Image (cartoon, rainbow, N blue to C red):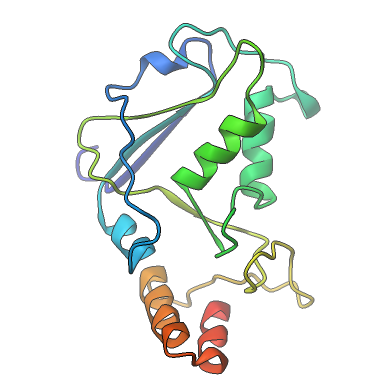
Length: 178
């Protein structure tokens, strides 16, 4: 597993918080230039747990899932964790969303990191992103925005960001439909 760049462990069980080895935040500043490109290059060893090291978690939620898994599915399937509306859900965005949505009186979802973590981030695509900031619904054609047609996502994001910086919005927006 050491050759894999991004590893994400999602633990929905009692005492899941015992798995991690670090307790401090291991994130890069999301405002840095080329943030998505940078975090997708770096190694990520991240853990998201339903509860802490000493917590029993609730396994009864909606639609036959636990509270944690139900909120995790909403976060990813419905794009609710894409808090900055850029079409990508970083581990940081996911963990902030889950900690708010799935916390209960005796259950607080946890975040931790394993040895080998190098401030990378496991990143998901928002499946409902329309190419407009703050939007997360499917387009009229039903096309899947974010398809790269063979180009690396980081390359597309970098090119679009450069065009936005130059106020060249007309040529930047079509990049998000690749």
